[in-house]
Image 1 (tube, rainbow, N blue to C red):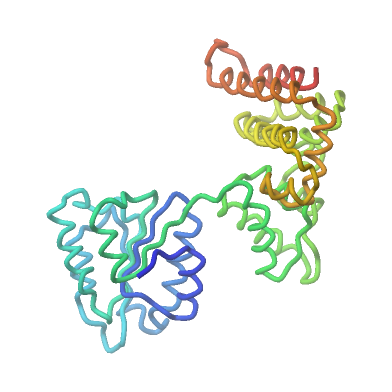
Image 2 (cartoon, rainbow, N blue to C red):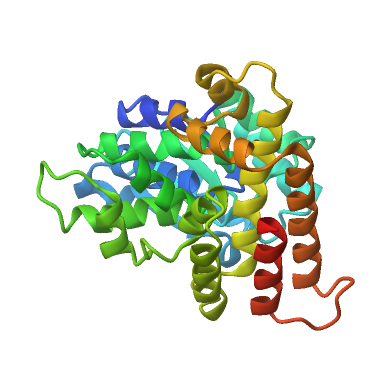
Length: 340
């Protein structure tokens, strides 16, 4: 069997094309939970779940118990489900002798059982267990999404729910939430509960229902910096510094670092057409104007110094080379260095 992407596996599962074995692991919990829920929905009919569906948790079970469930015959049904969540906590899973029994089962899995192991975190693929699951079932890795893929993913998720979302609304969600897919989808779902069927998700709606200030957020700080608007940049920085719980300094620094790193790439790219830069930077063409505008405002040498200043601020936030300095002072000094 090939290694499935979460999207490929999800499509097959929803079409009831089930494998006898699923080995799901990775550092992105969103797809792990989504796949487990999808398998639960389609494997056993609702009326049979009480007899033929067993949901176990790793810390409360062991390999012997899992195999006892998996080897039994379904009760007056075609198929049963044995789903193990948090499988990384299974007792005895670090014992080669005990996992050998699981490998033996996976080498000849019965067609009447769907056995699913869900691991939070990346499993060591050099071990023999996942290879046996891959050969006779489905191996699925749920990877953290790259930042440059997030805007398109958010737009596609909104469209899958039958709604439109503006590019600025997408950027506000991505910049303020980051690549936490579960939280992003949760916020979009929450927004949709308050909208009519034909209403578009705009920046104003994100501000209203997600609690992201349209005027005082990292996105607007970044915009003020690109325009060299000293007064506005300092006003926003003061607000962020006074509300570090909602705007943690590490998140602010990451966003600014990613932005100015792309501006640095713009300086080093000979073909500065919007189409080429969108491809080189890995961003939606809509955002290219921001990077081009900033490159015109900030020389190559200045951008290099900005990136150095962000790195110094990051070190200072961790107590490196700066002693004890509060986040407000670090952010204010950084804004000064960027603008001057």
